[in-house]
Image (cartoon, rainbow, N blue to C red; front, side, top):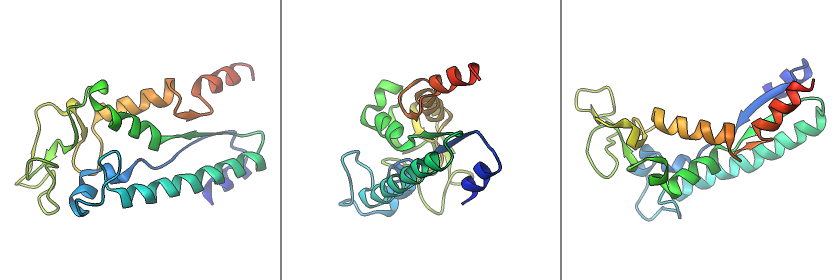
Length: 171
């Protein structure tokens, strides 16, 4: 494990992140059957895999915190931050939670596997800040901004960044 190797070398502050609900990406939505959906409206089987990965990963982070008590390992809860946006996208300024801004094919996902963003058949939307997804796989700048704000000033960072800054100032 590379993280463990860094900690053994004396790294004192590390930030790691979990996986987002990968079943919410237009790529996953296009490839999965319509009956494979969860309460977010995303691909249930893909989200189950991401969620299970995060549970195991958080256990690993806890174990590393015990093994290296002088280090601060911050876990960014990408899953729950992203899910929070998906549960109420309009609150965060998003009109299109599932459709790619840059792509082809139109609604509901604007994503075609062989005509992705950058190909001659694809085009970009005029208002990317209203979209969560840029190209079917990557998020828009607006979504990254929302998530970053949630990590830096919200409750989706464990421990919270504010406590890390306080600790750093007293060292």
